[in-house]
Length: 162
Image 1 (tube, rainbow, N blue to C red):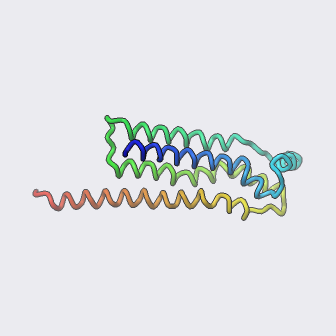
Image 2: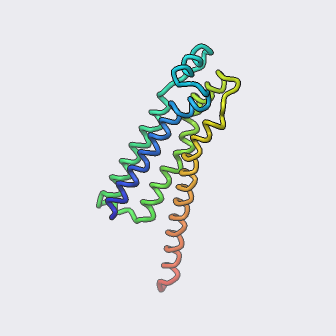
């Protein structure tokens, strides 16, 4: 069961990373500008604004590497992480994806805003909202796992004779 859950966790982090990359490189830019990506890039270039696909790859690559590292650490027998630690690390990776996304996506969306005076920030945010919601839920999962472990350790200390 641990192998299946670990593989699902790896897939979830990879999907999150690729989804964020596609958002910042394509989907959110198109939604915010309201025109196709090629037209948006041409308009941004004409307005001396930068567009780059590099931030998307900078976002996705560490996410994928963290997913693989987490998977190896979880499955490697010598580490023998407790379940609460495994869940907390996984949820922490997902939770920290939202701030990482904000910092890496800022450049492209800022350029869209500088290029189009009537840009639609709400449309971009509507596409990004699932990413933020997943990160928020993951944060709650991480805190819950840590609190459950803390309570369990506290109960063991109280019940053991001194």
